Image 1: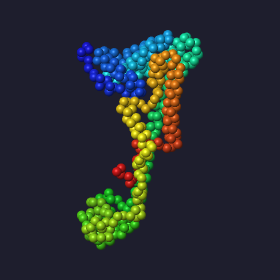
Image 2: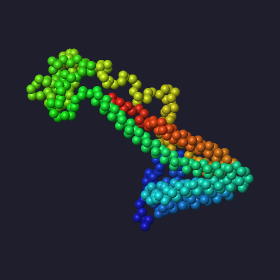
Image 3: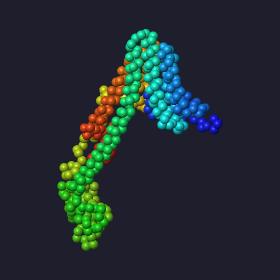
Image 4: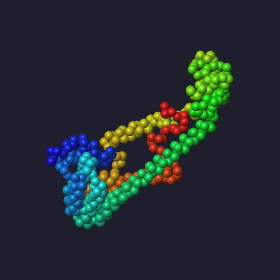
Length: 390
């Protein structure tokens, strides 16, 4: 039975990792979880749901150790529980055996493990020292974790709503812009329809170009090349048929010999009724950074490249790092580190959540005010008809 199973490689398992993850998971958990997942996938038939249940059992054992004031053992069991919790997701994505119930079980199992471990730490330290601060510490851990997991889905819904409304607003903006450009083009056009196939519908365009646009034009001068100026006097309408076949012509100015390039005079900017703006710094040109800002820009670029290369999200303290600090790092450092480490980690988590809420509020405020916030890719894109992207 096992011989007929597919053999997976370590690269196959690594391909199931999340595109971006917390730095604790990337550097401290995934190197172990990937190899455990490889063994489970090739040597066993354990399902992802079975791994989730086993992770929950290990979490309960960790809580019991914390309650018995066995902090080091409790920290090791919590780490193994979290590592197995990462393995079940990798197995589900690797074999395609994930289920909707497994998603619910994984979510609820995480909450049960955290609450029970927080209660275990509070009970164990209060029983050992009699200090009420540890009871408040356990309550604070549980409240912060529950708030984060209640707030995160709601923030995701808000972001999705903002993105959907932003897309609708951009489509409406582009449609209005195209309509305005079409109306302006028609208003400034020559007033004829070159799409008609009837030669009698084309006026004598060679004499209808306004002087203030193309300069003076001498009808007696014949243009070189395959296109000749129209002549309404031709009996067979050959000039009109040339326009119908090739489109309207732009006459040359008679300021020099007809066979010389100098005969074409540049059109002055004042003569164009729809002239492009005068030269200046392009809005899509961000300019050169100052000497003081250049090192900071290079540092940010290198940091961004490093984080992207190692799949690390750009935050310092999220829920996963908070759990690692409270249930792994602090117990390993000893009972005296529980209060300061947990307080510091909790403060960083609150700052991170406030920052995320603030960014969400800015995006919703911009929509409420009728402004469409643009993405970084759209900041320097011109939408006027003279911009060609060159």
